[in-house]
Image (cartoon, rainbow over all chains, first blue to last red; front, side):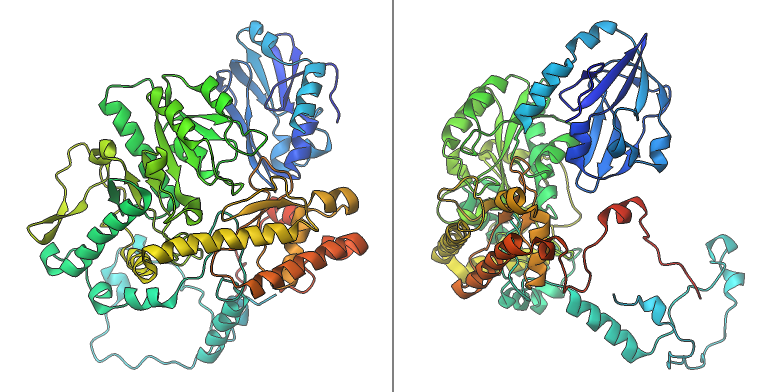
Length: 127
Length: 484
């Protein structure tokens, strides 16, 4: 299981990369592995105001349809449109292919996220 | 693969002719506004009568139902639909009436509805029943709306959350969500039952209720149901019974006696009406007396030896379906209950449990059974052994079963069990038929050991071989391209 050391994680199997006031958000290797072949991604609209815990995107695989939740409040400033035509990118390289970029309101919310070590332990518990 | 009927188009095949009109012709374009007129004639296939008949008969041969063979779809209770049910539903007094007829002209049908309300109340231990919901999930929605109405009527507006176990049918959280509740998941313990400690830790004045299936989706009876009911009721919540698995306990124990406040039933599962392919279904909802005022209108009541529709129920959540539910389905289920009688209903449940336990015991030789103890009407096996040792998954085994002429069981559900095969034989299967199924399952286990490539490539003999699900989902072709 690939869990990069430079990212933060959620219990819903999303990864977060912090870049100043912005966070990049995607799904983890664990998530893509368990979902199987991803066939469709519904992206958030630009400028959407999100509250932490909101569903911001939908990932559909041959097995299941899953929501992607934002662990932070803020505004969607970018969505990765490439995923609309090539949803398989999330299977091929889940950490390079983010789903959205969010301008965060409150950096304190990042403190609730899991470290790579904590996420690794969390995944082990789920197996 | 069969050709589509459009691909069988041959100009001039259709030998029907319309006789010349014996009234003056009217110019359509002169009488109907152009915006309502189509620009081109519809592209209907030109095909002879006999070829059209053959086309549809050929398709009907490719369908598979419980009238063709064993159909052990877990939690779906694909029991045989006795043909006497069809006879009853086609009696002219039931089939030639209209819902707009005055109630006094259809007293026989009204009496049937009234009796059915009472029979279902007796079977479930409830005080009042509506027959209106059109199917299971619709019944769930009706039941959860009743729970919401109850809390709101008491000015208890803080109850915004509904609890659902992690082994629940997917419709439970979906229903709670549709009715406007946030879903709180309750964990299962190591015995596959609701974890009472987890339940207690999540109870709060915000909890509207708990939606529970008993026996649960692992086919296991929730032994601590009375303690669960006490925890919910002490905190002011209500207990909802998902009736999908009632077949295991009907005539033996009653949700009402276990402490449930609301029950939905699936007449198309437990009470033998046709299931799948549009059924249609029927999802009656029963409630205890403290919720009766909130049921949909109308209920059928008896006044001075006459049956009437009671619309005078001011607390009612309103109508949930036009007219009185899927009446023909209710007639079939009523026929089933009367044909079996109280003893027969109990026998059916016992046979269903016996059949499931027989399969569980026999399948153990080849398949991993995660909760291997006395089950109710269904149980969960897995492909763990086959996957670990031979790389053969549950999906492969399910596909291979179709080569052996069986409908596969429910797969990959409940979600808390990996590689799940959820098997529900139902009471109507003979031991010989169960043995045929066991033989096939055993043969597949043998193939997985010695020739796994046969199983992973299956189905090999079916009309449609292994479907490329990824390409089908990524680039679906859902419309025939018109080449006329």
